[in-house]
Length: 183
Image 1: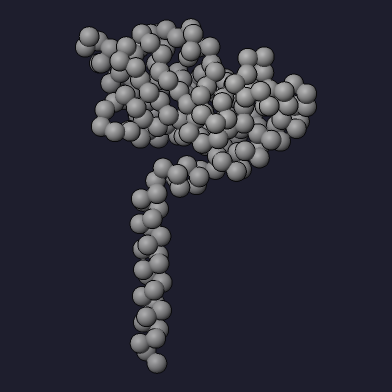
Image 2: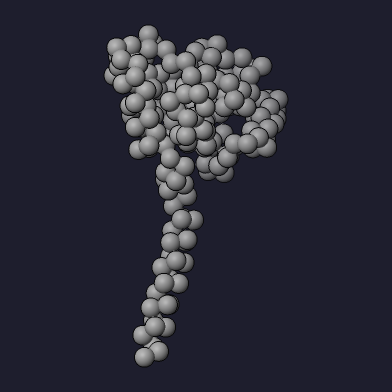
């Protein structure tokens, strides 16, 4: 029983020591967010997505649950829930894989090579098969609208950005007060 627990801790630490930003949800080690950049050489390049990861009690023998928090236009990602249709995660998972594999191999492959014949987003799949250029344009529009780095920060780090804004507002209001006090 302690083996899956140790493995979960080890994989999570390995992910945290990599180039990915990891934020824990709650106090446990089973749910967390990871910021994921769209792969270069793809229409997703420049986009940043917050990925919700949930590790089951039986991890690594059972696959993690992976979902996009902010919207992405992709045939194999449900637009509303962010659920991912990815065989290697959902069906062929092996304890040989770890969390770094998910973010360095599986998700980049998903974005680079969408599978429109097994869609969770039928509109994206149909557009991709019918008009690849229009599909890629819509992907880029979604990146601009929902996956900018500042969108990730605004959605999940409201507290720190609110503090920064209030400090700026405070400084500017002090200047205004100082200007009025010195006629």
